[in-house]
Length: 66
Image 1 (cartoon, rainbow, N blue to C red):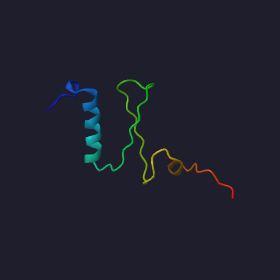
Image 2: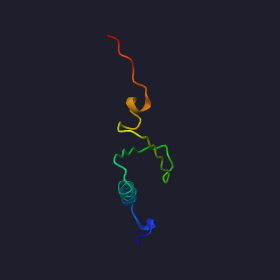
Image 3: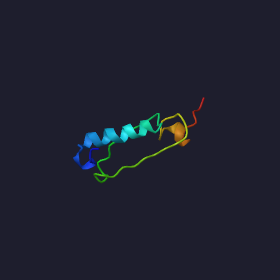
Image 4: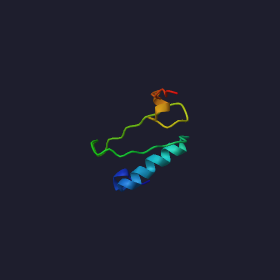
């Protein structure tokens, strides 16, 4: 088994994504944030098929006037 310390950053990302897909996650959105700590990871999850954070997922769909 390969120690995580021996992997490059891209290898670590690939491992995280592989673990997600193997556990049944069907949709993944990856965003980089320069303000986060180097080893910090944040996850958001919701039960639906619309994109995480989209107006449909957040319920912030504007009302359109006719």
